[in-house]
Image (cartoon, rainbow, N blue to C red; front, top):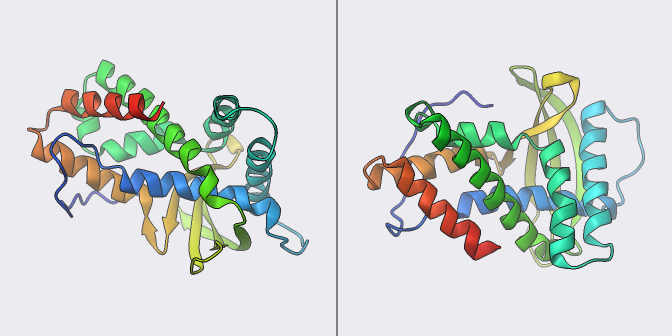
Length: 220
């Protein structure tokens, strides 16, 4: 994960609400993978990391465009996200310095809730990306053994957006560890939002967990 430690309170939010805009952006970026099978990118020799991004998108497309209810598709998407995205690592990074202040029970609850909220946000936004066009560019070293895969997203009626996927290789297989939307690290901004929320709520981790439970319940 990115090693930045800065946590700036960038905006005020309602006291009882956990920031979701940045988590939504992260989820939306993952959902954008679903456009790859429709992108029509010319065939070419691919690196393992570029191939991973294509294959991940193809599997998501198969679920989204296949039969089944929204609940059934959620059940199919969950193992794809768990296998291809380092959600545990992103959750730990997003908690920042509060990770070490949390008890083991709080850490476990936070990671579990982060999984639920991220998955709910992804599945709730999939319909927004019908007709998206997705092209893959070069992959470059990102540091710390990571690779960054550049992509360009074209949505109907929307300007093009540059989205870069940061892949880690723990255990030898690539997994998504961060997403940069227009040059901004979405895991870092999520971390800043959580820090802002906690600083306004007495650094009370249980309040954060309670708010995340309410989020997960509303999205279920």
